[in-house]
Amino acid sequence: MAMIEAFCLISAILLLLYYYSASKLSYWRRLGVKGPKPLLFVGNYKDVFLGRIKTTDCITKAYHDFKDEQMVGIYNGHIPHLILRDLDLIKDVLIKDFTKFADRTIDATREVEPLSEEMFRLEPERWRPLRTKFSPLFTTGKLKEMFGKMTKCADQLDAFLEKESSRNESLEFRQLAARYTADTVGSCVFGVQVNALTQDYSEFHRMGIRALKTSFKMYLMDRLRDYPLLFKTFGPFLADDTTTEFFVRITTEGMKYRMENQNLSPDFVDVLTKIKLDPKGHGLAEVDDIFLAAQSFVFFLAGFENGSLTIAHALYELALFPEVQEKARAKIKEVLAKTNGEITYEGLKEMNYMYGVFAETLRKYPVIMWVSRTALTDYTFRGTKVTIPKGQQVFIPISTIQRDPDIYPNPDVFDPERFTDDKEKTRHPMTFIPFGDGPRNCIGLRFARNQILVALIKILSKYKIEVCEKTRLKYKIDPIHLFLCQPYDGIHLKVTKLEA
Ligand code: HEM
Image (cartoon, rainbow, N blue to C red; front, side):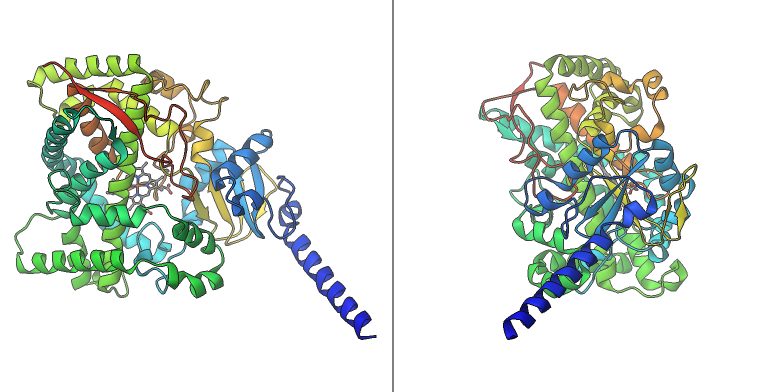
């Protein structure tokens, strides 16, 4: 009798679980959105959970399998994700209807990650005043002021390369470029000398590497984030206190120095100091040093990692396509000849071909492969019968769009001429969005463009970059990171100094 009761109980539980999962997984059908058939409990993420593919691969497959649809519904376990395919609808979400999508989908959870209350993850109420305060740091005037500091860092990069290239060994360019980006963000944004190119492992540089190092721990953190209860329970065991302590220390020291030296030129730390002294006057209810350090953390990491990856990816492609490298060098020399070899702010604007190299690199390797928004109200997509409820996560698949052969024929070919003015005009603006778009796009876009171009121009004008035995001829993406496009084991290239 007991056996029968136990059997009935287990069957009832299994049946309930089945109906629970099946009902969760009928969400998109009920909303009239097509998508790949999900599996009970894991949705469409079985292979992602098993570590066989990345989230982007799952998004890309759904995007291509549903070519005739404007949007595709998939499931991360039971969590429904909407992938937008239609470029006009993407424009609506990012720009036209931004107020209804002003939030991202990754929440800040301070009790697990103290530095998570940074601008990228903040809800609109606290994000808006910060964006207003930080945007003036990247005006044309400010960028011109920073330009001299950037070219100084490029001179140090040159000195570093000269020494390294004489050894006749291949160099790993991702780490090498990260020294330059640590120096540029340090001096231009924080007003500190990082010395990553002149010292072995300066503290800033070391902390940047530490915060972004891909590891199984980081993979677990990323996966747990989707399940708030699990994240709050297990996350604290995985968090990194050393990075937190470092960013809190340098931010508080920087602000203290500002308060004691009132006549310094306004910069990022200056804005943080003003917010600390009068949070209400800046539209924030209250702030503490951890909240302010979180802003330093995101600005430093974004400038350090995204720039260095892009420089390394560009050099990789230029080594694989030597004729493009030669053309780029010739165009650079033409412009530099007018300024006695000096890289100038005005000269940069004349280097259209190099802009093409920069843009084509970010087309093939958008560092952030997708961006997301959360609906702040129920929302009906223009010209459709689909209404998503408040809180629905919407994904914009940047890397998939930028590698779609219907938009960019032969997407694997590195061709900077895809970005001439004439050709750009023929494409929908949402086909090239490596910096996102709309009021919540990348705040450091123009800084990043200068930072990357200055380094590339300096390197190409003086050195030849080639593939070598250690170069992976077929790019392999690091499978661990959730949304960053990082090379699996670095970018190894040969570098030779050119005759003057
Ligand atoms: C190649 C370089 C870079 C790339 C590809 C890049 C890409 C992006 C993307 C895709 C976003 C999200 C945009 C969206 O959701 O619409 C973003 C946001 C952001 N980026 Fe960048 N970024 C780069 C460099 C930088 C630099 C140099 C800084 C600062 C010094 C920076 C700071 C930020 C911040 C603070 C946000 C959050 C903006 C907000 O929520 O208002 N990024 N970036």
